[in-house]
Amino acid sequence: RYSFARTTAILLAGTALLTAPLVALAAPVPLWVRALGLLAFASGAVSAAAAGPRTHLPFVALALAPLGHVCLLAFAARSAGACLRRGGVVWRGTFYPLSALRAGQRVRL
Image (tube, rainbow, N blue to C red):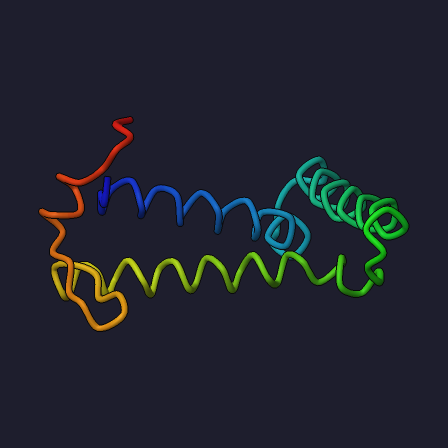
């Protein structure tokens, strides 16, 4: 729906989910929060190790997947900011205003 509030909420939630384990391990928090952070990291490592043979990807690539998610969030934030500044989207040299994009949506949520 090209909603600034919805996009901001999604970006903040994604950032929180990706950084929560790091904050839990690095910040001065109660021991149980640190334990949850360590558990989150351990579950990510176990998932990466288990997925390796099935996906035929090296462990390093799977372990660095969270970094890819951070990059994806950064790209989405940049794209949303450019869309808001321009008042629309430029695609293959054609400008599409937000009003036309909203009106042309097929799926209404």
